[in-house]
Image 1 (cartoon, rainbow, N blue to C red):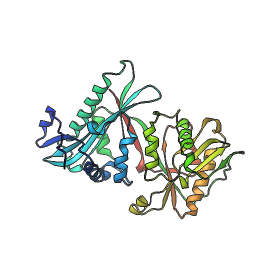
Image 2: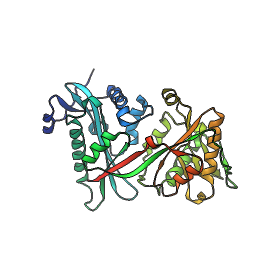
Image 3: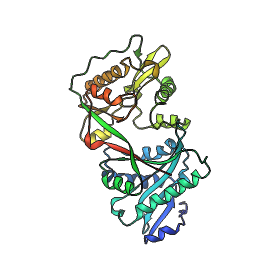
Image 4: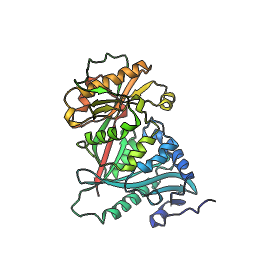
Amino acid sequence: METAKRYITWPPLQQVPGLAFRHFNGEPDHLVRLDIANACKKVNGLDWIITLDSIKNDELWSVNYDINQQLLYVELDGEPVGYFGWNWQEELSGAVIFWPWGNLVPSAWGNGIEDLMLQYAEEQCRKAADGMPADQQKLFRTWRKLKAREIVQFLQEHGYQPERYFFEMVRPIDKAIPECRLPEGLEIREVKPEHYRAIWDADQEAFHDHWGYAEPTEEMFEAWQKERLFRPQYWNVAWEGDQVCGMVRNFFDELENDEYNRKRGWTEEISVRRPWRGKGLAKALIAESIRMFRDMGMEETALGVDSENPNGALKLYESMGYEVEEDKKSVMLHKSL
């Protein structure tokens, strides 16, 4: 039996005839959201695969988020044309970051719907912030591909400014691989399920000093293991005794490679714990990962990087033969609450 839809009563909705915002209405709405997300891929500048499972798993990756209250669907004349939501988290720095997010199909842009979606989400975030200490830093933050020019411009017109840039880097598989050896006393071991917790904890520890870090929840640890591209059989994890020292959590996406006619392996999720930094460990793990993908018949490897990574990751990857893809750059935008 279908549950009655719960609609939002909000006077500004009257500005657009036929416009309505409603709450999440159960399992079938996941598919509605998937269809909208896929319809928006081009305007968002995305070239990756979005699946129903990844849509469902999003809830586990979001803190301070109630899907029944903080996910709204946008209808125009009774037809779904978008969705949006909001949540927030406290960074290790102490700042509280509010995330308004969503998608609106291209045909529905330009008549004020996008303005109302952002306005409503920001209002709800400000209500949540009212109960927080007045002296605590509070920011809105949202991520976009730079090639999504219309959306980036829209956000800037609403007070959001670029805060940080992120690059996607690609390396041809036939480029010479630098000679890099594991530091003495370290070894790469086959990853087993009993290692997952140690690997997760080591990775989180390594990222403590990275920009924007926030402590994960136990639900995120569980969600991580349910991800479609959770491929521990391809990871390279270095150990010294019973300590995880560093890792490259490699994966490849068959669906993505088929869709975009490429043979790409991702040398991603690269981290090294502080006691083992500066010894060439990251380079050795990346080199081993490139060789693995070469032997698998891949034609290129790729990774993402914070352009201002405090540990010099961008230069490290360049030294390993990776080059920035100009049309894949992205930006984090922010504005004060």
